[in-house]
Amino acid sequence: MEHAPAWLTNSLIYLSAAVIVVPLSRAIGLGSILGYLAAGIAIGPWGLGLVSNVEDILHFAEFGVVLMLFLIGLELEPRRLWNLRRPIFGAGSAQVLGCAALLFAAGVAAGAPWRVALVAALGLALSSTAIALQVMGERNLLPTSSGQAGFSILLFQDVAAIPILALLPLLGSAGQAQAQDGNSWWEALRIVLVIGGIILGGRLLLRPLLRWIAKSRTPEIFTAAALLLVVAIAALMQLVGLSMALGAFLAGVLLAESEYKRELETDIEPFKGLLLGLFFIAVGMSIDFGVLARSPGVMALIVLALLVLKGLVIWGIARPMGIPLAERPVFTLLLAQGGEFAFVVFQAAAGARVFSMETASLLIGAVAVSMLLTPLLLVAADRLLLPRLAGAGPALDELSEPQDAPVIIAGFGRYGQIIGRLLTAQGVRSTVLDHDADMVEAARAFGYQVHYGDASRLDLLRTAGAGHARVLVVAVDDEEQSLRIVALAQEHFPQLELVARARDVTHWNRLRDQGVTRVEREVFESSLRSGRTVLEVLGQTPHEARQHAMRFRRHNMELFEKMHPHYRDRQRLIAVVKQGRLQLEEQMARERAEDEERRKRGDERLPGWDADRR
View 1 (cartoon, one colour):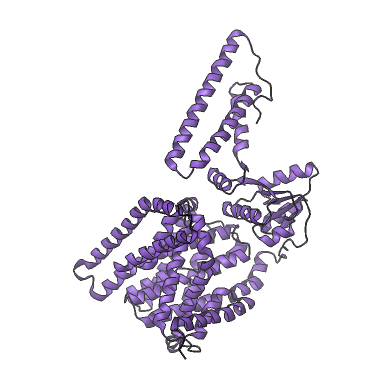
View 2 (tube, helix red, strand yellow):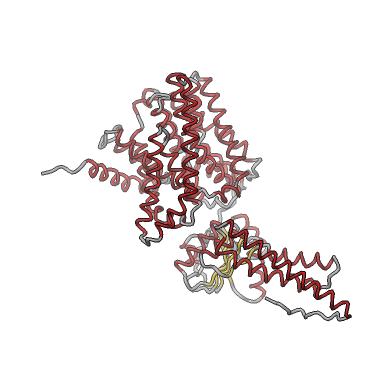
C-alpha cells in the first residue's frame, strides 16, 4: 500500500490542530491567534513531534507572511494614509522610535553587541496588529480616540516593518565582513534601484494590464493574475537578495490604487484568516523550547523589559494624543505586547546572520510569552483598574429587544440628531443606533431614546428591525464604517431605502459607486446658507441672495453628476471642474448684467421665492 504524500500528511496535521485547538483557545478567552500558536507548539518538535522538519515549516511561515504583507499593502490607499498622516507619522514614529531607543539602550547596557541590540529593539518595538485590532473591535473601541490612535500607530508599524526587513541584509553583511570593499553601499544602491523600478514599472503598466485581463470576463484568471504579480515581484526581490515580503507589500500598494482593488479584496479575503493561521502555526512550531529552558531568567527579563519599557513610552504619548484617562490602560496594554512582525524580523535576522538562531528563538519566545500574557493583563485591568478610572459604572447593554419603527438611524452625532429630532417632531418613530457609549449616555440624559450597538453588524441590524423598516439613515462619522453599513444593507435588506451622509467629495463618490443615490454632503447646505448671509450683508436683497444661491446649488449638483464617472481619472476630473466653473461664472455674469439693466430701467421686480427651487 502506498504511503500518503508528505504534503498531504502535513496538511492533515496542520488543519486538525487548528480545528481542535483554536476553538478551545477562543472559548477560554485567549483569542484565535494564541490558539494557532498553541496548535503549532503542540504538533511541533517540542510538543507531540508530529512534524519535525523545521525548514519546511519556515517555508509555510514565509509564504504566509508574503501574502499577509500583500493584503496590508492592498489596504494602504494613499488617500487614507494622507488623512491620518498626523497621528500615523507623529504618534506612530514617536512610539516606534521611543520604544526602540529604550530597548536598544537596555540591550547595550546588558552587554549585547550593538547590531543584536538594534535588531532586537526594532523587532520588539512592533506590536500585534491582529490581536490589537481584534480586541478593539470586540470592545467597540475603534471609533473612539484610543481606537483611532491605536489604529494609526499600528498602521505606521506595518509600514515601518518594511524598511526594518530591508535593513537586515545590510546589517548581516556588515557583521560578517565590515562591508567588504564597500559592498554595503552597492547593496543599498541595488535595493533603491530594484524598488524604484518596481514602483515605476507598476504605475505605468499595472492598470492597462489589469484592464486587459478584466476584459476576458474570467474572474479566476483575474485572481490568478494578481497572485502572479505577487509571486513575480517576490521572486525578483529574492533573486537580488532582498526580502520577498517587501516585494509583496509593494505589489499590494500598487494594486491599492487600482479601480479593481475591491474585486481583488473580495477574492482574496476568504484566504486571509487561514493564511495567517498557517503563519502562526509555523511560528509556534519553530519556537526552540530548549533555548528557553536553558535561559529562563534571560527570557523573563526580556519579557519584563519589553512590557515595562514599551508601556512607559505608550502611556507617555497617550496624553498628548488626547486619549481619555479611562481608555489609556487598554490602549497601553494592546500596544505594549510584542507583535507578529517581530517573528518575521528575528527569523530574517537569523537568516542574514545578524545573530544566531538561538538568539532568534529566545526573542521569538519572549514575544510569544508577551502575547500570551496580554489577555490576562487585560482581564486584570478590567477588574482592578478600569472601574476606578471610570467610576465603576455599569457597561451599556447592546440592543437586544426587536424593534419595529419604519426608520433606522445609524449614528446619533451632530448630523443624526437633527434628522431624529425632525422625525420626532413629525410623529415618525425611529430606531436610533450608536456605538459610542459616551454619546449614548449623553443623549439619554437629554431624553432621547438611543440604543447602544454597531450598525455594521448584521445581527444588530436585524434586531433593529431592518427586515421590515422602510428607510435606513446612514449618519455615522466614519467613512469606512458607513460603506460597510451600506454594503450590508444592500445585500441583506434590499427593501430598505438608503439615505446617507457624506463627509466629503470622496466619500460622496464612493457611496455613489455602491449605488446610493440619496447622499447629502454634511456641510454643503449650511455653507450655502452662510454664503447667502454674506451676500445679504454686502447689499443684495434676500430675494437676490437666495436666487443666486439656488442657482449655484443646482449647478453644483449637476456638476457633481458629471464629475462622478471621472473621479478616478485626475486629469479628466480637473478638466470637467474647470469647464463647469467657467460655465457658472459666465452664467452668473450674464444674470448680474440683466439685473443691472432692469434696475436702470426702473424695473425692480425679481422672480419670487420659489424660482429655481430644486
